[in-house]
Structure formats: C-alpha cells, structure tokens
Length: 323
Image 1 (cartoon, one colour):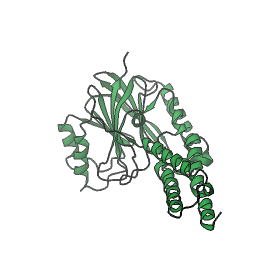
Image 2 (cartoon, helix red, strand yellow):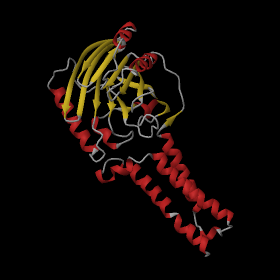
Image 3 (cartoon, helix red, strand yellow):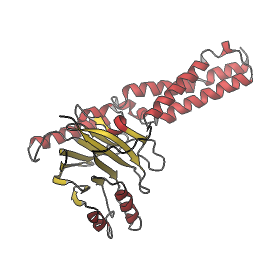
Image 4 (cartoon, one colour):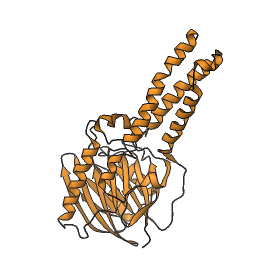
C-alpha cells in the first residue's frame, strides 16, 4: 500500500464517525439525555459534511490512480452518505403545494417581543397577507403599536391576550385563558367555534436551555396540562385538537409523543416548502411546531419568513376529520 493510499484510508474515519453519529442520533433522537446534543446537530449539515469529505477522498484517489483494493468500500460509503443527505433534506423540505379549500387557517409566530415601533406596521402587514382565520402570537411586545389593532379589527379579527400569547381570530372565541405558568413553561388554552365545529388549541412556549432534558420537559408540561384539564375549568375540557408553539424541541423527536396519542406534526404530515423555523435567516432547526389531532387533521403546513425577529412563523391549514 503506498503512502497516499494509507493517508486516504485513515482520513475516512471522521466521515465514518459522522455517519455513525447520524444513524445513532436518528435512532434515539432525544430519548437519551446524554445523546440529545447529537440529535440537535442539523441533519443535512452532519450528513453533508460526511458526504463532502468522502467525495473529496474519492476524487483524490481517482486523480492519483490509487488501487481500488487499497480503499475498500469507499464508493459505497459515498452512496450511503448521499442517501443520508437525501433523507435529511426530506425531513426539512417538501414540494410546494397550494392552499386547500374548506379549511381553517391557523398561524403561529413566536415574535420574541417586538421592540421596534418602526418594524411593527410591516409585521402587521405580513400577518394580514396570510389571510388566516386565527393568528396566535407568542410575546407580541409592541406588535400592535400604532394602528395595528385597528387594522386587524378592520379585517374582521377579534384580539385577545391571555398570558404570554395574543390571539387574533375571525372565528368565534369561546374561551382564552392561561393554563400554565411555571418558570419558563407557559401555555394558554383557546377554544373556538368554527364553521366545522369546535376546535381547542393549546399554545405553548417551552424553554430553550440546550442542557435541559427535552423528554423530562415534555413529561412535566403534559402532566401539568392534564392536571389543569381535569379540574374542569375549560368549557369543553379534554385534550386539545392542536398544540402549537415554540417547543424548542426539534421535529421528529421522540419526546413529542409525550403530549399524547393521535397527534400528527403538521409539517411532517402535510408540509410545503422549507420546514426549518429557526434561526429565521438560516432556518436549520424546526422547533416551532404544530401537533394536530382530535377532531382535526393537517391539510397543509408552510413555514414563512416574517422578515424580522428570530423565528419564522407557521401557517397550518386544518381540515375537520370525517365523522
């Protein structure tokens, strides 16, 4: 074996390690706290680095006419890395689809407190352009500054505030009330009377601490919300049809199953376009999510850049399930 072949052979190991980390983190996601960090590495970047490195090694070997027997299975490794790359992109991208008819459009945006009165009117325009039936905003701050409230009212919206969330709705709001405020865990329940029947939404905002166990966070939140429902304070009670918000949990995480059975993540089921939500300018992480179940199903989900702040917003078209 010549010296170059030896160097190339050993140089593959970082790429092999990246592919192994990709596979293991896909298997465990955030089930194991110690492995959570690996699941948070953006999937296309992790697989893409392995693919690029193996491809460079393959090109150098071809250019130097290295005997294939001295780099066993390298081409297969490139194929595996390319497959991982494709799989990773399928988790963040879907073909673009049009808005479906006969649905309720729900928009959620974590505004992270709009502090600029100069940008507020532009953001209001952006939200109104989405032609939503319901808009839920986390930490709106100065979003309604100036004539924002009047512009929404003129478009047929009623605006309510409950806890850290503002709700603008064109459909009847039966109830809106905070149901959780424990440290950095927040949730508000909103119930609507739509033309298709009742719809219960729980808007949540979970902490962004990267060292906190997402699995344990979901156990805490879902338990607290279930306890609130059991008190019977809600006009209808029972699990919500939609759980929406900044989960600070990536799409596809095993921990999301802790919110209950029968929920579908909207973009994973009916996504359109690029599905990353954070950070806004380079959205590699999908942490703003919508879990849909109960009497409703996701017909379409799109992630939209509002043009300011840190998060992209979710546009979810909801269809009633056949009864």
